[in-house]
Amino acid sequence: MGDGEHTDVLVIGAGFSGLYALHRLRSLGFSVRVLEQADGVGGTWFWNRYPGARCDSESYYYCYSFDPELEREWTWTERYPGQEEIRGYLEHVADRYDLRRDIEFGVRVSAAAWDESGWTVTAEDGSSRRCRWLVTAVGCLSAANVPDLPGLADFAGEWHHTGRWPHEGVDVGGKRVGVVGTGSTGIQVIPVLAEQAGHLTVFQRTPNYSIPARNAPVSAAETAATRADYAAIRRVQQASTNGHPFVLSDVDVLDLPADRRRELYEAAWERGGLRFRAAVKDLLTDRAVNDDASDFIREKIRETVHDPATAETLTPRDHPFATKRPPIDTHYFETYNRDDVSLVDVKADPIAAVTPTGVRLESGAEHRLDVLVFATGFDALTGPLLGMDIRGRDGVSLREAWADGPRTHLGLGVSGFPDLFTITGPGSPSVLTNMPVAIEQHVEWTTDLLLRLRDTGERAEPTPEAEEAWAHEVVRAAEATLLPQAASSWYLGANVPGKARVFLPYAGGYARYRDTCAEEAAAGYPGFALTRPTATESPVAAAGR
Ligand code: N01
Image (cartoon, rainbow, N blue to C red; front, side, top):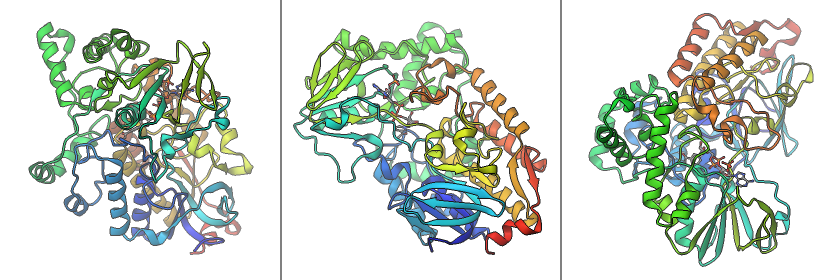
């Protein structure tokens, strides 16, 4: 296999999406090859090896549901699975379904070009492969965003982005460590680095809300109960807004007397994690409700952090709770009570430069560091796709097509790019959902469409009208919520200088999205132009079948 090969389908990426796409397509008789830049499976869980990396979804539902046997045989050890455990799970999946024989590791795709007979995919090493259908499974949060700080190249210590953490680990013992960023990643890594470092300095631009995760081992009894209940758990997930198996609260918190309301919040705080969000009805649609819940969290920060000035600097006031992806933590706010941890407000005094010995702020204040950690997030959703030179009809590039922001139909296809399918693409519910749920739906919907195309010999490409309508629906869905009120959110592309400000994921809810996709399929894919190539440009011939 390799250079010059033809397959029916090429899949880019071997994380949750790519592995399932390979398994399902191969089971349906397609010839498939997966191209993966890493030398192992896992995608995000291959790369994000920073200390404290752990999933914010709970283990029993952050996993595949397509095979009940797999659910029965895999045992999770903690309420929230750590990075190593999830990677181990995905390696198990790769072995169990004999996936590795169709994955080429260490192949980084740099370009893909469509012509009348299919796709030519080129890798950085110059090799190329051809296919009829191209499926991108490149993840939403895989293009690391390292701030363009003057002087970084001359830093005499070591620096790392959390999403590219060295596999051999980083020895921070006794060292002066700086962390830039207090999103979900920063909030996970900061308490763990504080335990290991000589001194930790956190450079915070925007304070964040966080809810205690309440991680704990999973008992044998809990595992047995989950296994007995899996079918019902999966049904709740499928009917949900976020792909979690929680039933959203139907209690109007503002109608409760103060003591009952307090009890509700306290109970949700004790349960911990993303369940807190589910406990407050209309949290993301009613500003008064959100303000009330946000006040409760602000109060918890004041109670937890001993120094009032530090507590105030840590208190978020610029956005409603959960309008940015809500982090969950283990002892995050408590970490600021340590003598060997300091907090620097880089909104008040921005980072001016990295010097050979540390970080200098605009005021001239210097912070001496041996290790600098960027927990500064990702060029989300579009970054991984635009990192490749993808060219569709008439040589038009995806970068040109998306110059004013991404346009897709259902997040899964792009007008002008025939037979290209973008799993978890912009405009899909992806990152607003417990990811494996969205991924399984995207893969199943896409492979169902490929079955039809294989039978009919048609090509598929979203119509401009469908794309336009979906763009309106994505905007409508976001504006029906408080989500756009978080001005610095990566959901809006605000974290990457120069990136178009467009709300990237579909906020209308997973269940609604799934129904929309089902209706599209049942109606014969009216949002797609389904065309038959002429005899001379037959894609079936090109696929070498
Ligand atoms: O990235 P982020 P992340 N100078 O973009 C700051 C998923 N995830 O890696 O808010 C100073 O959220 C930036 O500040 P501001 C999850 O979906 C999942 O933490 O832009 N600071 C912010 O504080 C999550 O949402 C899990 O003002 C700068 C931080 O860096 C997504 O990944 C775990 C800066 C970036 O926060 C991304 O989270 C972790 C600069 N120049 C992550 N540039 C699990 O479930 C950026 N910042 C396991």
